[in-house]
Image (cartoon, rainbow, N blue to C red; front, side, top):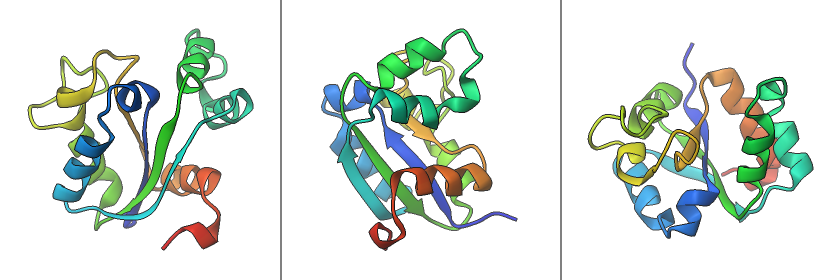
Length: 139
């Protein structure tokens, strides 16, 4: 059953390029309500824990290095069918394959520097949101 919340991060590449406002605007225009948000930076330990599912993959070290190189914006979003609708809004991981009008088509530069993270399931949305936010930080 679909839940009404998902998790996202505006990644260091998009933050560095000044895309926070544009991405948040697309999220709002997509009908999402931001129920938690923070500007923060992942430590190496945090990034390794968050991406532990990829620990055995050859790109793991590069991913951790990328995600710790600068600040991110973490957010929990609310909307009916949030996970699926947000995955549609962000577009394909490869911006060259992303549909027109998606966040990654507009703001991502490569598969590795793809501007945003979006939870891939309701279960992961809950886990990822809880990783970044205490209950009292979610409204």
